[in-house]
Image (cartoon, rainbow, N blue to C red; front, side, top):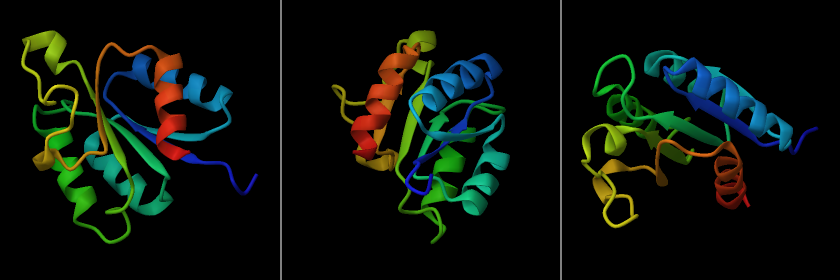
Length: 130
């Protein structure tokens, strides 16, 4: 189908990738996955998804921040919305979002705290993509 929206999942948690890939595919999205930030950025530049769902902390604590910065500095990926998904709040109690809003410096379209229910994630993706 030519209008099928493409979603790229970038996360080092294979279970998270698998569960959410199945949920997104069941909702009619075309999904690709990457287990590392570096490979995810390369795949985004090549595949050009409509939306990226990316973990904040992966192989290194700053991997998600670095990948987001790289995505926003390349012409072929700068306009792709990125939803950051992380367990940093659950693990540390530290919130990156400000009262549910993404801080301007993060350059992400949305911020979701883990754990996130796959049905809720599909709903939020649908809202983001229209």
